[in-house]
Image (cartoon, rainbow, N blue to C red):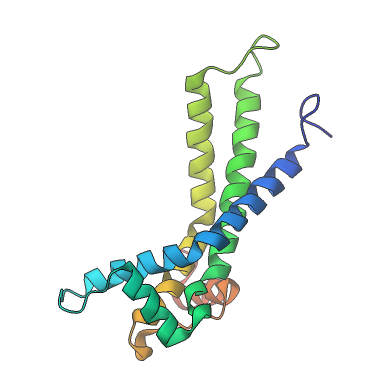
Length: 170
């Protein structure tokens, strides 16, 4: 079932968008982890022991090994799978709906593409937000004192823990 002549079916667009985003997230995740740790370090207040990005990466590897650079990766992957799949899929559906009254063979006006993109991004962000929360918490755990750590094993453990301990609205 193709959307238009020569175009892949909608489910393939969802799948392709999600898989491409997951590949990108897995490659860039260590940088995101370092960024979060640098941000948390800034909240501590003391400028005396602040690390730069390279020193932070070395610190993470020294304390947790190379796998420590991938702390929170399961949440990042699920977030990308959900966010990007929804965003690409909703964008295609919105463009199709907005273009129903367009003459055949003409392109959708830029303003309508922008509206479709904004709507798709908003829906994707709203749906993927729980994964973002868990990802940041998993990334931040390593900088917290042991008694304050959440110790989520993976994204699903995090989702379950938040639902049990804080409720669905958290």
